[in-house]
Image (cartoon, rainbow over all chains, first blue to last red; front, side, top):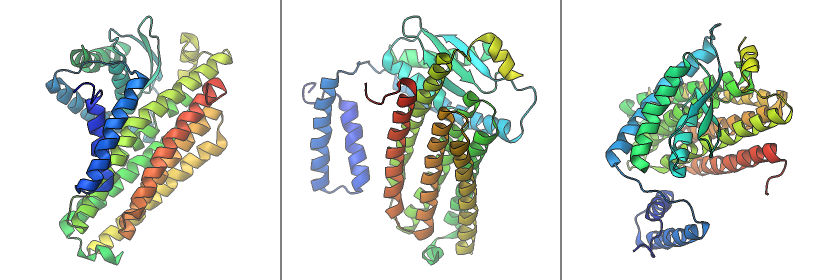
Length: 161
Length: 120
Length: 93
């Protein structure tokens, strides 16, 4: 099984995308999609991506829910900053020491932080684990650090390790 | 616009509201691009449009075409997934590129003294 | 009733998106630095894609959807390439 489907998740995602684009469940397009998805899995093997184990689907769901709620909240916060600028707003860079080391988990964290308006991932040092963030509304540095560490880093460590 | 005459009112109201909300969010993000002072602040503005702005317009489109053609139309989900996955990547690349260029010119924006000056 | 509601909300949405595209265009033209222009371009194509989706609802055809998908794909690739270019001065290393 592993030899035939080296990257099962990616193959499934590709197949689903193919069926969505075709908008049918007819056997012809499904067959082409299946062949493409399996072939793409083999091609991926030669790229040698770093593998990580994904566990705890419950934690994934909870994290996804948190992210959706947080993005909605920070959408409102950033819209307020733009439409009604406050004089005392402080923007700036923030350094966080991450304990997360798995590459795919870091990619997920980067996507979460950048997709959230108000925080942007700027630089990460792979050797020391220091992350440089830019925050639009930097009220309290310690509370931002604890939000990132507890709300996002902790569940990601549970999922990927 | 006559093709929409057979759209029931219960579907037209959410479609209209979602359209207005989504484009309003996209407009807010773009105004932010004008009003915010430094590049790193402006980096945050487009994410409003690409998170819930796009989500609202796509949802309006899904509702409209699903009700009109009386079958589930999920094409828009693809655009949604694609934009959600790609926007952070481009913004991260842009942020790093800007930092790299600033450092090349000898102005490191992460330096605490300059950070205070930028805030004032 | 529904036609009027949809027509007016579509018009308002398209006006807002047009204004958003103007803001992004201003940032592309004004700069002041290259990264600002690239960021403006990125916002411009996202707003353009939303505009195409509203046109799709107005005309009732799914044809506009394909165009929006192409814009999303090309926009991502071009912004990533431009950012890479800003960082290193070359696209392919």
